[in-house]
Image 1 (cartoon, rainbow, N blue to C red):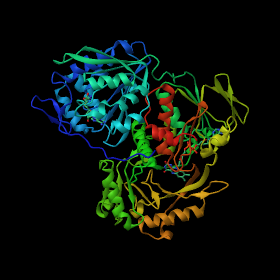
Image 2 (tube, protein in one colour):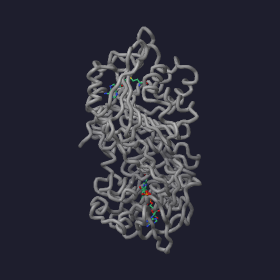
Image 3 (cartoon, helix red, strand yellow):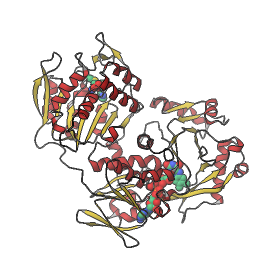
Image 4 (cartoon, rainbow, N blue to C red):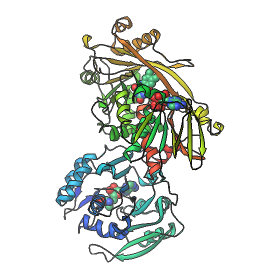
Amino acid sequence: MSFQFSPLAPASLHRDVSGTPFSERYGDIYHSRQGAIEQARHIFLNGNGLPDRWRGRSSFTVCETGFGLGRNFLALWQAWRLDPQRSRRLHVVSFEAHPFAAKDMLEAARDLPSDLRILARQLAAAWPLLLPGVHRLEFDAGRVSLTLFFGRIEQMASEAQAAVDAFFLDGFAPQKNPEMWSRTLFGQLVRLGRPGATAATWCVNGEVRRALRDSGFIVSKAPGFGGKREMTQAVLRPGLGWAKETRRDGRVLIVGAGPAGAAAAHALALRGRESLVVDPAVTLGRGGSHRGHLAAALTPLISRDDDQRSRLSRAGVLRALGRWQSLPEAARPKRVGTIELLADVSQEALRRSTLQTLAFPKEWVEWLDADEVSRRVGIALNQPGTFFAHGQLVRPEPLLEALLGNPLTQCHAGRIANLQREGDGWVARSTAGESFEAAYVVLANSTEAASLLSTCFDLHKLPKLKSGWRLAGQVSHFQVSDAGLDPATILSAEGYFLPALQGVNVAGGTYVAEAAESRVTMQGHRAIAQQLAGILKKDTANVLQWLDKSGGWAGWRAVVGGRLPVIGQVHGLDDIWLSCAFGSRGLTWAPLAADLLAATLEGEPLPLERSLQRAVAPR
Ligand SMILES: Cc1cc2nc3c(=O)[nH]c(=O)nc-3n(C[C@H](O)[C@H](O)[C@H](O)COP(=O)(O)OP(=O)(O)OC[C@H]3O[C@@H](n4cnc5c(N)ncnc54)[C@H](O)[C@@H]3O)c2cc1C
Ligand SMILES: C[S@@+](CC[C@H](N)C(=O)[O-])C[C@H]1O[C@@H](n2cnc3c(N)ncnc32)[C@H](O)[C@@H]1O
C-alpha cells in the first residue's frame, strides 16, 4: 500500500480567557481548566491504576492518543521517577497531528510547578524537528522512551507496533475531533494492547463508550475530575491482547563488525544486552573493517511523494542524531550540512516545487540560491542547490571503535562458516573450527550474509536477498586547501566531495559491477577527479595534481532490488536477524536497523512505521 503524503500542520499556542491552552483549529481547550497535571493524575494515572500497576515490572508501556503540550507525559514521567518501586523502564507512545514547536512547548511550561518545569525543559531540549514520521526521544539515561508519531492518527495508529499496558485517550471533544474516538482507531488500540491493558479518559460520551465496548473493552464509569461527575475506565476483554512475550535473555552473536554490526552491538549494549561480534577485520582493531576509510557522508534523501527510501533515510538520519551525537568527540559525526547541487539547471523548478509540497522545516532542508551556496560552502560555485542542515561528516574507523567499545560487547577475530540450531539457540562455527553459542544471531556481514544464511535456511524463500548483488568502488583522497577549495559543507552532485579532515578531502565514488576484487586504482582516481572537476569547474588534470599520497579507500556495497536495506527477522527463524544490503548508505541505515533490532528483542515500542518495517523485511 502506498503512503499518502500530507504535510504536517503544526499547532500554534493560544490561550482562552482563563489562560488555558486553546486550539483555534478544533475550538477546544487542551486540558481541564481545573489544571492539566491534576487532570492527568486523576484521569490518566489513577484511571489506569498507576503507579500500582508498573510496580515490580521490568517495563511498562503507555500509549496516548494526542500528545499536545505533553502535560500527561510530564505528569506520568514525574510519577514514575518519584516511585521507588517503579518499573525498570517506562515507554510512552503518543500520536500528534499538530505538534507545537519547541519554543511553544517551553513557553507553555511557564505555568507548571518548578519540578515539572525541569522535566518540561528536558522535553523541549529533546523535542524533534516538526517532520512527519516517528521520532524516538530518550530520557533518564534511556530508561524512559517517548516514541512520537507525527501525523494523523487515522494513518499513524496502524503504523505503530508496541505492547501497551495503559491507554490515555485524550483527543479534543468527540463532536469536534471524531477521528480521535473512532471505532477504527479503537480497533488499532486493541491490536496494540497487552492482555489486561486498561484505558482511561475524561470523556463519557455514549457513542465513544459503545465504540470502546464494541472494539473489545469492558467499560465502566468512575468519579470524574474538575466538575465532571464521571469519567470512563476500560479494560481489555479476557482473551484479547498482544500475548506474545518478545523478550528473551541471552547473548547475541553478531557476524560482521562494519557499521551494521557495530551499531547493533551498541544499541544492544545501551539496553544492557551482551553481544559477541565476530569479524576477521578486527585483527586490525575494532574499527578494522573500515581501516583507511577516512571520511564518509550521512545525508537524508527527499522525494516529491516522500517515498519509502526518503522516509527511511529521514528515520535513519534522525536515529544517527539521537544515538551518535553523544559519542566521544573523535567518533561523533560532525553536522556540517550537505549541499546537493543540481545535475542540470532545468531541474530547479521541479526541486523547488518538491520542497514546497513537502513543506519540511527549513532547519531540515531548504533551497539556496547560487550566492548563498557559495557563501556557505566557502567556494564560488555559482550554482544553486538544496541544503540539508543535518548532513553529517563521519569518520568510520573511530565511529566503529566507539560503537564496539562497550564492556558488554566482545569482539573476536574470525570468519563464521556456518550456523546450526542447537536446542533453544544457535551455534556458529568459524573457518578456524571455533564454535560460538548464542540466543540470537545478527547477520551483519553485508555481501556474505546470504551465503552464510544458506547454511541453515532455504534461500529460495528469500528471493530478494538471494538475487542481491555487490558493487565494488573506491573513494580518492585529495589535498585542496592550498588551492582555497576546501568546502565547509558536504557537496553532492555527480559524485561527492567532503570537507577536509586532518588536511585530506575525500571525494567519491566509483561503482564497479561484476568486479572480482575491490581496490584503489588509477582509473578510479581519474573517474573521481573528473567528477570533482565538474563540481569545482576545474580541469581534470588540474584536480589529479591534488591527489594525496594516501591514495584512497576501496570497499564493497551490498545491494538488493528496490535499493532498500534488508532489516529484520528471518521468517520462520525468528532469532536470526538480517541487517544488510546497505548499498551506498550504510551510515544512514545502520543506527536505524540497530535500534529496530534491539527494540524488538527487548519488547519495546518500535521506532519505525510498520509499513517501512515491511518494506525492509527479508523477503
Ligand atoms: C567507496 C565507498 C564509499 C562509501 N561511502 C559511503 C558514504 O559516504 N556514506 C555511507 O553511508 N556509506 C558509504 N559507503 C557504503 C558503506 O561503506 C556501506 O553501506 C557500509 O559499509 C555497509 O555496512 P555493513 O556493516 O553492512 O558492511 P561492511 O562495512 O562491508 O562490513 C561487513 C563486515 O562483515 C565481515 N564479514 C563478512 N563475512 C563474514 C563472516 N562470514 N564472518 C565474519 N565476518 C564477516 C567483513 O569482514 C566486514 O568487515 C561507501 C562504500 C564504498 C565502497
Ligand atoms: C486534548 S489535546 C491533548 C493534550 C495532551 N494529551 C497533553 O497532555 O497536553 C488533543 C490533541 O490531539 C491532537 N489531535 C487532534 N486530532 C488528531 C488526529 N487526527 N491525529 C493526531 N492527533 C490529533 C491535537 O492536535 C491535540 O494536540
